[in-house]
Length: 93
Image 1 (cartoon, rainbow, N blue to C red):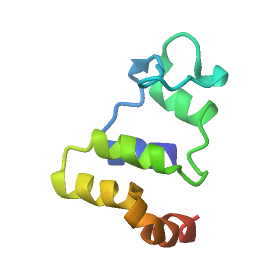
Image 2 (tube, rainbow, N blue to C red; image 1 turned 60 degrees about the vertical axis):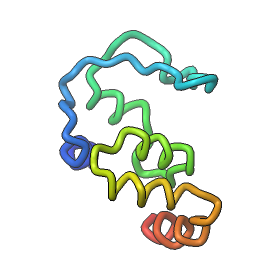
Image 3 (cartoon, rainbow, N blue to C red; image 1 turned 90 degrees about the vertical axis):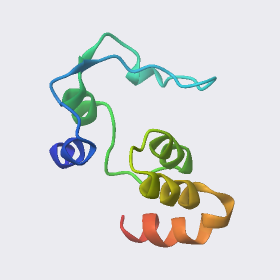
Image 4 (cartoon, rainbow, N blue to C red; image 1 turned 135 degrees about the vertical axis):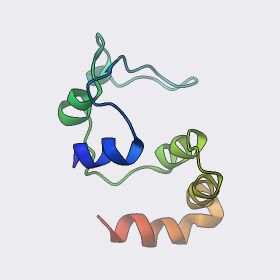
């Protein structure tokens, strides 16, 4: 599942990254630490199978290169998109 996610994102799983907080958000303690391979972080420190929060969907939209996909993610994470979020995200879990 992690490899499929990395492929979909076009990300290099071997790239060393350090997780940092965004804005005024606090970084969860289990993510704080030295740089590590992205694939290892996703395998060992992040539950990629959990239902995502709207904040994550919004963050993905902020970094989406395809404008139509970004718009769809923004709509999904909006108050007006509540019903769609429930149908699309919760039904696929």
